[in-house]
Length: 238
Figure 1 (cartoon, rainbow, N blue to C red):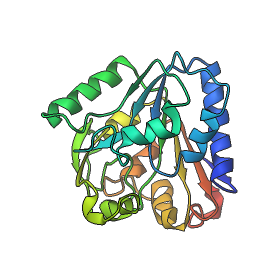
Figure 2 (cartoon, rainbow, N blue to C red):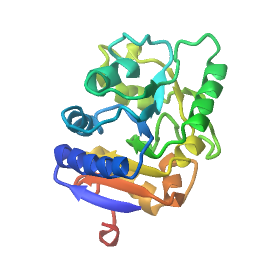
Figure 3 (cartoon, rainbow, N blue to C red):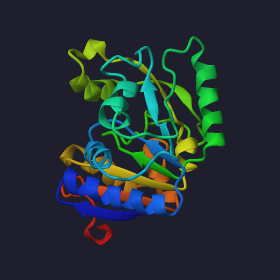
Figure 4 (tube, helix red, strand yellow):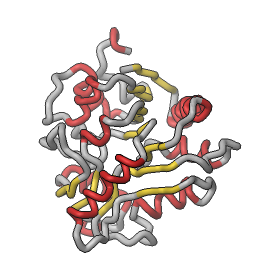
């Protein structure tokens, strides 16, 4: 893993922008996207840039079950608000959280990734080490699947809803094996609440109890951290 410690999210967004710009010049065709607060500075920079994404396909990590695309808390809505209304892409794919057959919808999403191999995947990390909605205990060989969200993830996401009771209890998420198939990965983490997850991801054993630890086995991972998220890392790893 390569580790970059930045002053703040704005600097982290600029660094990720430069990496994406370089990948575009090298022929990037498919970009894996993430939601949440961590990539917002990047999306703002991309939205106001001159980069041309008209030949690039996007594939999102996950989506809540039961929320329509026009629900302000859906990830469809998030991506439209922060990126898609500003930039034209060849195609944008997100899981169908309203499908009648959610298992079949997950299988169809894997087919999308087979047809559009991801060149660069963006990730955040949960306090419990989840990537996408792959909670602790998720098998490393998992493909896109239906997830029952843990109480800690529901609580963490409740800040986006009026009450915790409104937070969906399930999601469709790329699996860990799906994420690991990306050629390159950028993971953002900001704030002291992410420090222990980052430490365990980088220095701990590779275990399904810490989903992000599998990234130790990926050939091209760039971590973009602020000082507080990196604060628990041994000095020799920084």
